[in-house]
Image 1 (cartoon, rainbow, N blue to C red):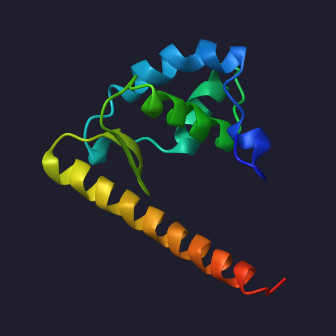
Image 2 (image 1 turned 90 degrees about the vertical axis):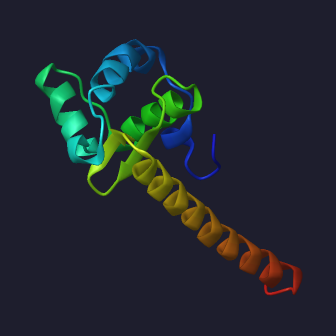
Length: 120
């Protein structure tokens, strides 16, 4: 779990684990950025079946799928989640991911610097 985001990052519960096969099967059809599915669309599909899932838990389920290799090369963009169909798509996603990590590291390093200089 991530401090400050306990509910959003807690491990999958039993009900969410039962939904995994449906998530995996649905995502496996989303090959290529043009077939991406958004968090909102995923939630709407489950809602049609009477299952309400908060957007933060969809992200957690997707994270679980990625970390456990249940759907390989699963990417995301503003268009939604999709499986990379070529080198360009996976490379663009990895570059974007690295950029976000670098941006977060910059913030972290600045906070460490400020804290160690006694700003609090």
